[in-house]
Length: 334
Image 1 (cartoon, one colour):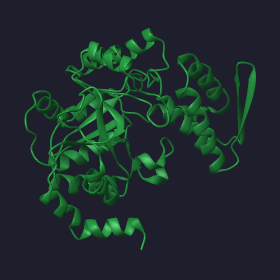
Image 2 (cartoon, rainbow, N blue to C red):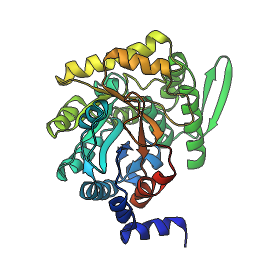
Image 3 (cartoon, rainbow, N blue to C red):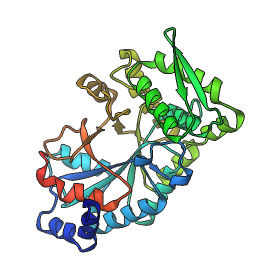
């Protein structure tokens, strides 16, 4: 019997629920999601961070029944005021602003739950696509079997002969972009579009992210909108003025477009990259946000920095997520 089967048995027979009743959470669990899309339709984001609508509904149903689901607004205010959180407090958050997040909001609303959706602004305004989705979509959908990049007089060849080579190219290009400043991204993307783009793919890519009307529809369902920068630039690698603009301008634009206060920020470009530091944190504070979330795994406690909030990584398997929350916490420093 493998560990996955054991975790599902523990979930099914209430072992995790027993732990939760005997040792209730005194801190907040902030769940981190990205996309809600069936695997056969997912050509725009990494499979490990995408759940099908049925899988996400299973998550929402379980968490709504067994935890105290609250808005991030409420949790941040309680923590900042050093007040006592309700037991087993939990919040849903989403990064990036994929168009499928509207369906996620509808599922949350169905169970009288709410969530915070961190939006990348330029894709919502249809000024530019989200570059992560653009890179992934082109490389998975193109009929071309190879392409190349010219960077600093070096020619880098990328074969696209099968799915494995396409994902290898995606990872390599994402690494190049995240590890450098805006100029590198502005060098790579036009080459990608010129070699792999066509009218059909370009039109499809433009619709991968939420638009203004969909975001407003989500706010009408009591969802909270936060900022995830203007263009999903890697902030520690950006020029200082550029990072300040990404953080502050996204707040101003969202407030103008949506007519509501934008209180929360999420640092973009997690993974094996430097995406957060104290300098960037201080920029977020100066921009006037109430909180900021990271992609570091952990819990939000009374001693946590509200501008460096840890979240719980989610995967499609509900038992795996609950295991992190109810078993692994006994071995956590939070």
